[in-house]
Length: 108
Length: 122
Image: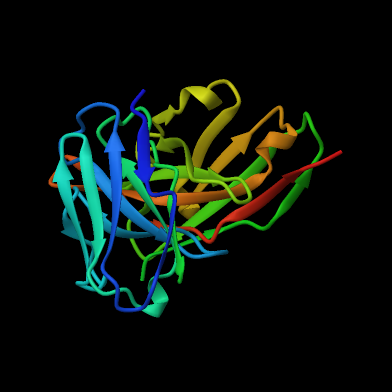
C-alpha cells in the first residue's frame, strides 16, 4: 500500500503569511495527488487536483506543485478563512485512495 | 447545482449493521463513481471504497472487505453504504463523495455529502 505523510502536523501562522505544507508518498505516484481543505464540522473541500491544477472557484492564492514522491501546497497570503486542516490524497492506486494524516493551520 | 444529501445520524449497538444513504442531484447519477470516506472524531480521513452507479461494480479498501457493502438505486439516484459487525472503533462521521475523472486519468473527489454520524455504543 502507498503511505502518505505530511509535514508539519500543525503550524501557527498570521494573516498575510506565506504557508507551505509538504506531502510525501512512500513510492512514486507521478502527479496523482489531490489537496483538500476541511473546516471543523464540515466536509472536505477539493482545492488542488493532479498535483497542480486549481479546482474551479478556489482562490488563486492556493497552489500545488511536485511530482513523484514529494509535493507541496502553498498559500501565498494566508487569509482568515484559510485556518483549517489540509489533507493530501493519492489517486495513483485506485485500490486505495490514501489520505495523508493532515496539517492543521491555526492562528498565531 | 450538484448536491449529495446523506441520511441522518444513527446510533447502533456493537455487532449490528448500519446503512447510510447518499442522494445525488444536479448531475447524471450514473456518470460518476461514488466513494465513501469516514472520519473518527479528531482523526483524519479514511477511504473505504467506491461504487460505479452505472454498473454497480465496487472496490473496497482491504480493511473493510467482508464488512462493507456499497449499493445503489438508480431510479432515485441514491447510493448506499452498509457496514456490518459494528464495533466501537466504527464510531465516526461517514461521507459520500463524487469521484470525477480528469483527462481520463486523475480521480478527484469534487463534491461531498454533509456527513452522517454513526455512533456505536452498548
